[in-house]
Amino acid sequence: MLRDTIRFWRNGQAVEVSGFHPRTTLLDYLRLQERRVGTKEGCAEGDCGACTVALGRLRGERVRYEPVNACILLLGQVDGAELVTVEDLAAGGELHPVQSAMVASHGSQCGFCTPGIVMSLFTLYHEGERPLSRENVNDALAGNLCRCTGYRPIVDATLQVCHQQPNDTFAARSEQTAQGLMSLADGREVFIGNETRFFAAPANEASLATLYAQHPDATLVAGCTDVGLWITKAMMEIEKVIWLGRVAGLDLIEDSSDALGIGATVTHSEIHPSLVRIDPDLGEIMRRFGSLQVRASGTVGGSIANGSPIGDLAPAFVALGAELELRQGETVRTMPLESFFIAYRKQDRLPGEFVRRVRVPKLKTDEVFRAYKISKRFDEDISAALGAFKFTLDRRRIADARVAFGGMAGTPKRAIETERTLIGLSLDEPSSWGEAMAAIARDYQPLDDHRASSAYRSTIARNLVFKALSETASGETQATRIVGRREALEAAE
Image (cartoon, rainbow, N blue to C red; front, side, top):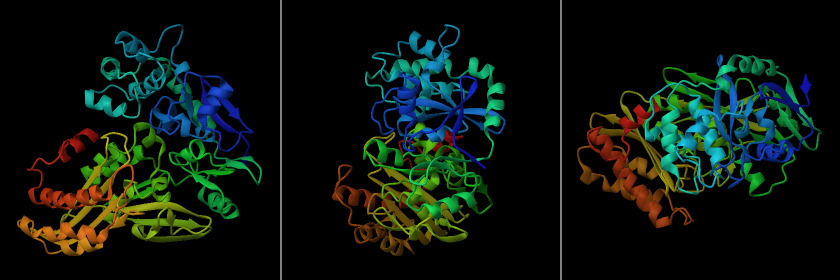
């Protein structure tokens, strides 16, 4: 059963759109088709937040609103969701509570970035009644650039209004919206276009496997946080798009006593709480993984499948000993995650084969984990290097070690020589750690680029070996973080 339209909820009614080019972005649709120009184009790469809109989706019986970057989201990805833009907030001639607070606090200056900021605050407002700190608000606004540097009044406005129970037209009609979204969930396949140019959204794995086998040249899209830049920056002529967002089963999280099974389309926002429970450092990495907009759209499978050498999840998962599951047609195969990455932007993936699931082992009682993200900016920045360490301890000695880095090579890569020299080290003899620190130079010969020099990366990696050993030796007693591991866990909760 095929459907040749996408359907989404808009201002209390269903909207159907057909016949669009597969690479049409949501921002272009809003500005050029609907003529809703309140949503702005700033960076066109998902960094500045001027294009932020909200998508509402059913989570259980509740409609949950999340911010997304319309500039790098494909129009087809709004299928089944409620779309909210800044023009939709005011009702009956009165501003939305978030907008009123911005006015009262003088949070809007030039106004260009204000619509995106308001939409981010709208989603925070709808998270419900809870205490908020300035740090919480800063996290929520990390993906919104204010070019007038008006952050203080913006944060003041947020603290005034976003801690209370939502009381707006969206809250009042939440039941109607939930019913509307349920009516859109017909379980049908979406195919818009023809055999040479199409946007497709399979409804199950079997359909995805069949379609991708027939069109191995198609571009798979999950969150579009990377592919979106191919369109807006590289100007790539993408003619065939297969969106994975409607594939039943790929969005599952399987949480067992010894491992976490993560479906390919699970978003970074959805997996965050589960990763925190494995270790607080994973939670802190995810808190700094892009912005809320990026984490709401980007997926675990997409982060791994694009094979970026500076992706943050892959080295952390490699250090934990994760396994990857792939499917081609009816064939499913499993491999160690580290074996998936062959060379720069080249993976062990056959034509028509897609990432299905990643299995991340949980820590045993004799294992400790540490991970560190090094970047020029604290928030929303690509890593110059990310180091991840898993030590198996025999009392105060390292019995086994897994070390992986991102940003140090053309792929996320284990530090095999460093691992060998770590085995047998005593945590009580820091003078013996030098050989393990020096071994990093045999594992990596990092390149110079605009994020960091080769010498800087080498020095950082060597120092992170010492830092991981030092923290493991001292436990939580030694303050080595701007934000400590315990604070990171509390913040995530």
